[in-house]
Amino acid sequence: MNNSQKHCIVWVCLIALLLGSLLSAKEQADDPLRAEALAGNIDSQLKLGTEFFFGTQTRPRNLVLAVYWFRQSAEQGSADGAYNLGVSYEKGWGVDRISLIQAYGWFDKAAKQNLPEAKLRLALLLAAGVPDEHLTKETLPGIAADRPAAFRLLRELAKGGYLPAAREFGRLIFNDRASREANGKEARELLILSAHSDDVESLLLLGTYFRDAIGGSGDQSKAFECYKKAVELGSNEAKVNLATAYEFGFGVAADPQRAFELVKEAAVAGNPRAQLRLGDYYLNGDMVKHSLTEALSLYRKSFDAGYLSAAVRLGRCAELGLGMRADPVRAAELYGIAARAGDPDGQYAFGRCHQKGIGMDSDAAGAVFWFKTATAAGQLDAIRELGICLLIGNGVEKDEAQGVKLLEAAVASGDAEAMVILNNH
Image (cartoon, rainbow, N blue to C red; front, side, top):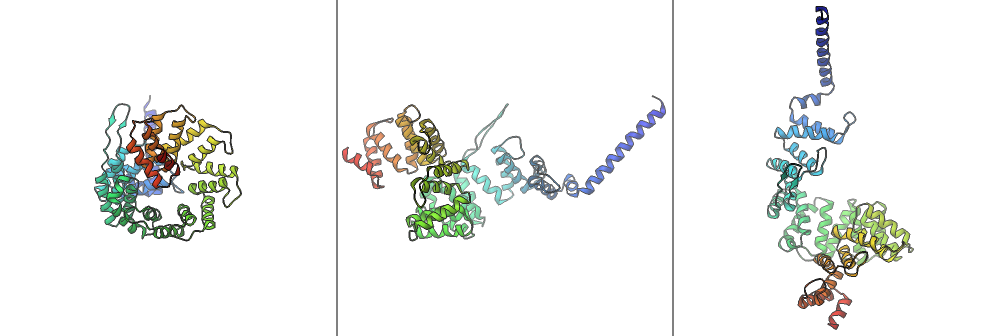
């Protein structure tokens, strides 16, 4: 290579570097937010991450880049960045995998800087516990559930004016029957505070506390007012609750026509609970012309929307051949879906499948398991059936005293079949 060629190569490299520098300068001039973020400005990193997260006209949505910039700010001590990173790991947005352990760690960092949202997420993870995470080459140890610590965090937040914590405290107490007696009164008081802020979810939950006498005496009128206010705030979910009040006269004069109208409005708006209820109207020919086709269509819409309790209705139709060919195997599958999702009616129905061999081999012990599960939720038919199993020792060790006790409880709730069994015992 001669000197002329060497000089030419050098000049080409210099020109390339100069062009790269000019392009970089132009890019930074055209995108000052990115330039500031690259320079380490935390606020710019957060803003850039947020723009990538939601997408803008000039910056297409990119969750991986959003997480990158959230991490940059978090590693510099930003509470908001740590919180956003925690949510990303919790939901699996822009990261290689969902990791509740990683989420917990980042929420903890943000919580230590007194970010209320992070304390709330941390409390909810503490209440449930975080399982171990098994990776290819290692296992990350989880975090044991600590409900007292979770409750302390939520109380602190709620009493400090962060009202979403009051709602979540109320939800945790409601979902744990053992906690209702010990903490129900406090949960109701906190829910009253959050409901005053016109938080729809708090209103719905508070209405249920009044309706079911959790944390104090029952008050159907107050429950009705909670549901009514939530409807006025635009909640289709509340329309279903309000419809039940009008249907049975809970806290208001009974008005079946108004109940039907509310259910139909919410169903048309796409509420899956309302679709299920409207399906019942068509199935029973109540307020509308009887139509199995319409009922099944609405049940399927509800189920497809993720309301797994609709699987109980679909299972019943499959079992009895209502609007379709009878299919006991499919019926058992559908009951099982609802049962595992926590629906007490589904748990009872799935127990009955085990007991009677509907769509599966009979399994007395399996039946007892599901009857027990549904009984814990207060399902009346399951209470009776579990009582019978204990009375005769079917699928469980015989315990006449406990069997009679359960049957008496069923009778007290109006179960005529349980009364006949007791009278013949």
